[in-house]
Image (spheres, rainbow, N blue to C red):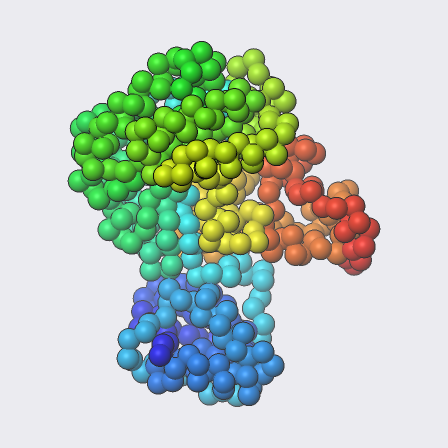
Length: 452
């Protein structure tokens, strides 16, 4: 049976009546605990099984087993299963008197992000009309200023705090020439890198990925029709490029998947894309529904590209899954839906998003808004950036900031904060960040009690 204890690199401390788990080396706090949680941590000294501690907690407090389970879920990266005795240097009475965490300190629920989302560059040579990145035209990642050595340091620290995935985003990630090595460093640290690209993958580049330990890459292709590709991304020969990339990846032993953005232009061609993916041996075919963007490139508007009948997409997906039963076909749900069920936006909750220069930011669709920036990962530790109190106010702005919006008088205001607000939706609909960001039912709003 599992016997948890706090790993030796961490320590529990009480300061000003508040309880913290901190790094023994840097003294950086990575989580705050209530009195009951502090008692639960005291019980996890490596001598009792988790089941035994659950029974003790139930005798101490109502639903104590649930409190213990959630604490283990939160602190799992900091806990050890090795047979080591780790006593918290405070008695139970002292721990029980620990005050509730001070929310203004900005300490997040989890000690570190589960997902790192790196915006590798804002440069791209494509002109995809549906792109939300608002890319800068170019073939060099001139803004990608964070060095490989710094990224490696970030990955290593993130791994100790429980990070599982690295999302490599941006306009065109392959413009970062050392990307294979970066992904290799991520893998060595225990973090799984995920890349989707529209860039060409040469035989040499495919070998670099393979040598770095990369086992899978996602290729973006929305249509195999020359005219539609010319319309959507500015290149009628794009499907030919993807075929060459596929051949090179397969020679190198790197698996690939296909990702397709569904717009009104590509809906009728879903079957041809599925046939393409099946023929060339894609691991997964993933369809991503178009989402309105701040400023569409070219002559088409959001309304031109939006799919009006989502039910038609669902029917088509079912048909394709039956027709190509040997190919995994799915609709994109987002990594956060797998790891963090219930979040509307996971940035600052379980994901840390940062820019090409290493500066933390609140939203990858609003990167032009400088006031949404946090700490610089080139200058501070990842833990400090994650638990920065100033950035906590950017993640969850104070209630008074919402005056004049429906949210201000809503009794579910704090609940929405906990689930994460989508600033982009608020900005897109109302022209301000502190506004309604989800489709609340009118009855829900009417039944909410006003916050005073």
